[in-house]
Image (cartoon, rainbow, N blue to C red; front, side):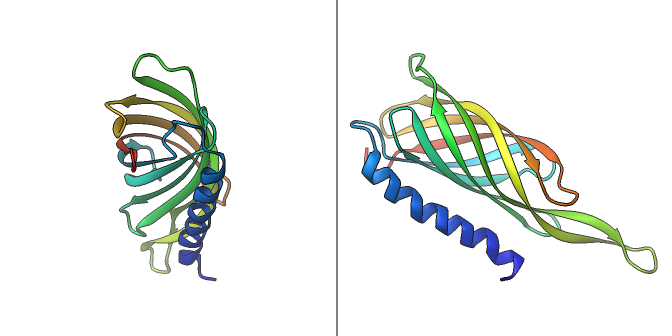
Length: 173
């Protein structure tokens, strides 16, 4: 299997498994699915745009699938699955903790004969940890800020941080 097809295939598996789990264990009255498109800032190779889809398991616990994109010489994709643990609400604000793992693409430079530089695509397993705040505007949508630390486990994969802001939609609410 080519390296480019690994990330989309893993994303499809996580998305397919998520709804089946959420449908059987979702808490009464909680939004079973939340979709958050986002834009972000962060150190290399953090994604710049993406979407997170969270499937509620219990009133405090969700599993989240996320895919991100960074425009660079290789058009890097990232994909992760994380557990989100909601802390006690403060009015309309819900703080949460997050931890997970996934795959991310990054580029390393190498020198060609003749002295020119070229980028080589690599894929690494990355772990992440962090948290954020979700502010509910109403039952159907809210605003979310998320800060994560990532550590790539592949050759030349380093650690990086990312902060994103997004709008959370709760379909069916």
